[in-house]
Figure (cartoon, helix red, strand yellow):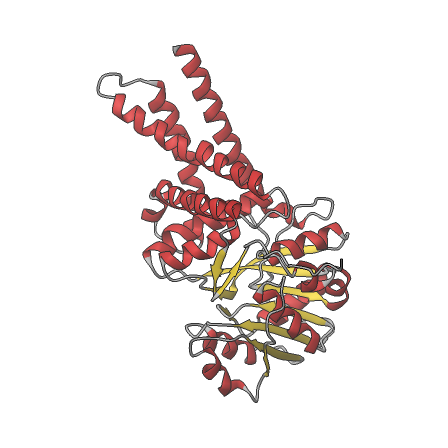
Length: 391
């Protein structure tokens, strides 16, 4: 029995060690947007911003967009049917932006995708920038991104922005979730043209118009809740060039401000990320998180419990080894984004909460209960339509 336990603990420790190595190879020295650069040419950029129920952030976002130092741009704001003060806040920018009233949402469309599609139809630019109402842009961000797109000859550039984290739950939960996303997609591997690893960040996606139209635009992903990921995959499948760079000094984003928002926001994504076999893949991710990220801490606790009577027990050695590797990864990330060390120590709590979000998401998705977001419900089966029959 002891030999079996030692073998299983060794296998578990090896898996965590391999994960740490994979994390180092794919995430360390992630490419960054060059600090200063000037485009060789200055094509018209159409900035398309869907805005619905974002009164907390929309003023600062639009203000930063209209004051970008890029000289050849148009800002198109697609106004959803907001229930807060979003529309009133946007009115003061009516002479600096093109404000479009969103048409009623057609069946089969996700609201954000419909807004982006409508903005695209009004856009005149050779380049299309899709961004979100919870983002804030530095004055030189677009100049730098256009220059980088031209230098790399990319078809789409997407940015990993700076994260604005103010509350306890944001600092606890958001960094581990970002870490997991990057691990699942392969981190830096998304920038390799010979691999299908792909990730887009809907908070900042700059397309060449020809590339966007070739892959079908938001129409091609109209029913996708995680549309940015789907667009990036389509781009890669079409043989086009994707580049993702970190740019915390160019764009800042505060996604959610409370535990409830974090829960609902990531719940809609967990189950819906895959394009097929959603239930099976959701179960795989849950099993992976429990086995690789939660079990090591359970082993450590068991080792500590046994230590008074068996100081040199294998659970303690294996648990300490695995926990330190896992803590090191989140500690490096937290320090890079200005989150204090104490939150990294709470990594096991964060993973348990995110696992609970995943369980909630998987149950709702599998049962067809749907996901509520900004006054709409997605993911419910379409009601059957009765058709008249002629005898």
